[in-house]
Image 1 (cartoon, rainbow, N blue to C red):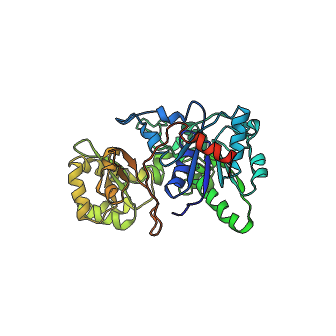
Image 2: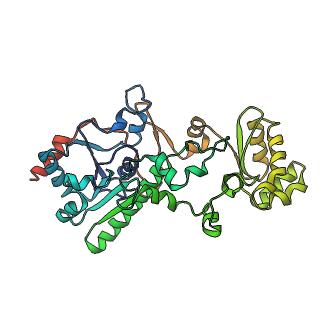
Image 3: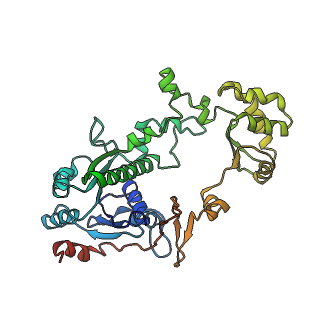
Amino acid sequence: MKLEGLRVLDLSLFLPGPYLTQMMADHGAEVIKVEPPGGEPVRDVGYKTEDGVAVWFRNTHRNKKSVVLNLKDDNDREALLNLADTADVFVEAFRPGVVDRLGIGPDRIRERNPRIVYASIAAFGQTGPEASRPAHDLAIQALAGTLSLNLGADGEPANPGLPAADVTGSMVALAGILMALYRRETTGRGDYIDVSMMDSLMSWLPNVTGPVFAEDRAPIVANERSFGGYAFFTTYRTSDGKHIALGGVERKFVVNMLNALGRPELIDVASGPPGPAQQPVKTFLKETFASRTRADWEAFFDAHDVCAAPVLNLHEAFHSRQAEARQMLVRDEGGNLHIGLPIKFAEEPGTLAPDLPELGEHTEEIVETVKNPD
């Protein structure tokens, strides 16, 4: 597999770091999860399957090894340093300053092992006035400005359905790690990567920063292209209480649909700029979609070239024909469900190995090996 032969130390908890390192484990890296004595918190967070395993843990820690170390203990800290001497990648997600106080910061680790790629993932990075602020995904999205774009029916900010700051931070860190490993092939040296989840999230917004960059103002969410300002880029309720989404404002889609519905006079309005002028089209479409079921409209979309889709709930999405065809829902031999692998190589594909480590299962084996390498 693509990352076979790499050893990764993962000291992170919750989602950003563990998701990143699981991606590496799925593609062949040896990932050693260094857990505190109490264990990774998500071992016990949220829904559990019949075998008592948390779904969150199962989908962020498969195919990893578990080592338990108390980093405030001198012997355990020395064991980690010895382990870092053998590693290619070191991932941590403590609040800024913690690793230096523990004596496992990037300067010390890289002095001992110049080839290592050391990645720090933090809410706001290692610098700046917010660096020490405690935060999880919701607070990061609040300061990044994206929460202000996620409005409920009452026009107030609503909890996002996607942990966007966590996942963008994770993927930006993965990209940085792979870049550094690639460069190491030439220089022989690793690097230090300072990843801010806020930075990562903001970097993913080129399609919605128009008002900010071009007109020096905040977006008026309801009028903006990406947030429902277009009649053909928003959702509508159907007669059975479900919803459909129109997701393309290209004129050809507008023409196809409005002609099929017998309202060609609305084509120019729907093809105009987003905002209040779109209201006549929105009113017509709202009334029209409310007259039939979601299944009726799915059949309509199949018969016409329109950019649209049914709004599936999460259960429907994971059990859809498309998810099945792409193997994005995988059932292991024990009957447990896993999120599939999103990266699909033609050669050396990743492997979804469902094995999960017991807390500290590999401590003795791995720690003793680095103590006595012969």
